[in-house]
Length: 273
Image (cartoon, rainbow, N blue to C red; front, side):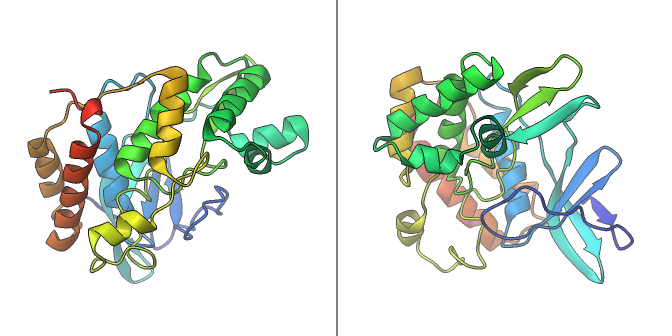
């Protein structure tokens, strides 16, 4: 079990505008550490990123590892990840980029369209025009496939980003990151462990193009096609969860296994044996 002491380290000031929670974060050298705050965010980050290694995803993504963090007299679970930004790169959330270019809110502009497909096409077209990035719609679709499968409830317009290279003055899609609020990880408020699975499924809402995961996913795949397939098995899932036994109790790991088994059945067309 990896453990790090951060008693003498100040957390990084919160700047990511996450819509839920206030997760403590530290940067030590080239490594980011995030402490669980609402439930089992570290498990979610670690498991999702490890399972993405067994997929056809063509876009880079951040790989997380679980860790125990000692901070101010408490020992809490969390995760670590390498800093993917190079010295000459900036991470720019789409909300900020859109506001800089237009003076308007991206979230409000998207809400002006009545259909999810219109919102997705608008965002893809706007980003390609603003940044010169090609095939941004395919990137969005892959992101929505991951979000639907792993039930990411936190994909607001500040949680999608691009990279800007200050030397070349060119943009590129950001590696996919921040999957902490997947898999009903918020056990403190919305999805306590004793809440039945069906109730959790009824309660969760997607972002940013529709409150329904399948509605926005279907719209994106209709526009840009299926972008990835998963090749992990239930055995792979169980192996990954077993490796997290030092960090998370059996009750949590069993719940997550149940969720992923359900999602594998539901999104069978994304599974490749």
